[in-house]
Amino acid sequence: MRKVLISGAGIAGTTLAYWLRRHGFAPTVVERAPAPRTGGHAVDIRGSALGVVERMGLLGPLRELGTDMRGMSFVNGSGKTLVKVTEHTLTGGLTDSEDVEILRDDLTRVLSSAAQEGVEYVYGDWITGISQDSGEARVTFAHGEARDFDFVVGADGQHSVVRSLVFGAEKQFSHHMDTYLAVFTVPNFLKLDHWQTFHLAPGTLAGVYSARGNSEARAMLGFQSPELDFDRHDLEQQRKLLADRFLGQGWEVPRLLRETASRELYFDSMTQIRMDRFTEGRVALVGDAGYGPSPLSGQGTSLAIVGAYVLAGSLAVRDDHRAAFGAYEEEMRSFVQQNQALATANQRKHTRFAQWKQIQSMRMLPYLPFRSRIMKAAMRPLTEASNALVLKDY
Image (tube, rainbow, N blue to C red; front, side, top):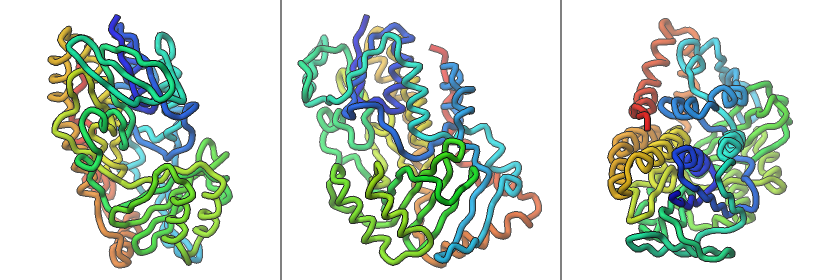
């Protein structure tokens, strides 16, 4: 039984562990966090990725955990509603799709529950070295003893340790999208009912949306900026960056800044990972580690799920891992490029005039004839990109 080490117990890692075990491999998942990670933003499962989770028997349970948002509103600095967009407004456009929107930690929990039997999980440890020869990969860890594996897979996200060890420094693959985003859990103090509320200011966005049957909420603070030099493990430094950037803003921004002091916080740049190849020797990358499209694409989760399925299947049907890795790269390349292009198209400057135009367009939408056709046309690039890979039966 071939042994595979997976670095990262997130969406890509747990999906890969499931499919490798199903194909007869012996997966080990190593995760730096001491326990499964909680918090994070809502993510979307679209297109080909829906087919993967359906084949796992998880589509129904994931739909039950969906956010079920009824709509959204935009407010000014005083909290006055500028525009409100409901499901009725978007009939035939966004909200009647088959996509599943779900909290990231809920999705990871369901995936890891499905990938338990026959899968070894090691929490609180991480890879420090990888050496390869023709027969195996020798891996050293921060805490555990060195071990040998047939293959090693980096599913450890945008700042992948595996990628740095095997492919080189992150800087050569990382493309900053001029935006930073913070996400954290807060009480549902606005009493939102399956609803999202946003406040736009030049170069910034603040928002709150209800979660888990309105029992809690997730908050986000985003701002445009050239690349910043900060320690991504220093939460206090990140909180100060947010406080400085949102100083003096209205609406609920002061409260949200206070909430960051006592909450788990995800803060990072919106960055795209672009690589010429996703494999090297006995090592492969999957998900954000190899081809993160950035949250601006809305497709990071779907790429991770599909990539894990294709990688596991390619290894399962080929004895030669070099041929398997080659097939994985060939099948994923165009799919990755199409979905990464979505982020580039969505990257825009949030000037006051641009935000005014956005609000006016949303105000006009309910009164436009054929609005469902308008929304479907606007969503066509995302629909086509998310369905661009036809799943094989391995």
